[in-house]
Length: 183
Image (cartoon, rainbow, N blue to C red; front, side, top):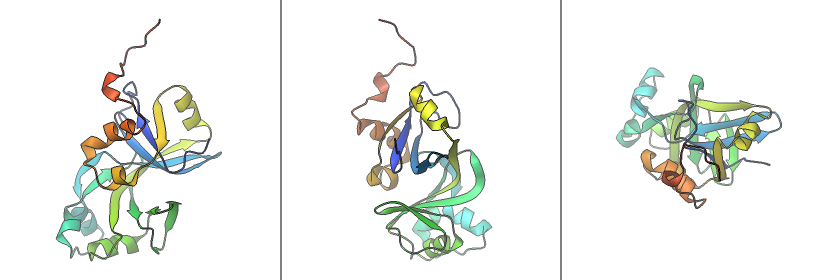
């Protein structure tokens, strides 16, 4: 099962505070493990503040006001830029047609100048799973998974992304109980 370019949608029963009520965009998935970026956890930090710490001057006011996401519990001091279209950046992985993730300073500098990709989301940290770990969590019903949607990643307000991602699968998360039942 290849979950590249899929959403992982936390089930209401997932109690881990790192992932409760999250939507994670999977950027890599193989036998060795998986890596993704949580797309609905804004930090109390905007991109202008983050870029200031990197000594990158922000010329585009709208970019400076963008909220930075808490991308996951691993390497929380490392930046990741989900973006579309992919373009040509120093350290970039094209995840799917039209969506890539970059980790290089050049894309941040381009965003600050107002010359970055048309769509972008900047996150600190990522979510990672070792070999077989994600598959075990899926088998334990910790997550729903389904194909990713660019509009949910880049256009929807953060607080709507969890319900919208589940809704794409025909699931209303409000109707799922956290209680286990027996017929």
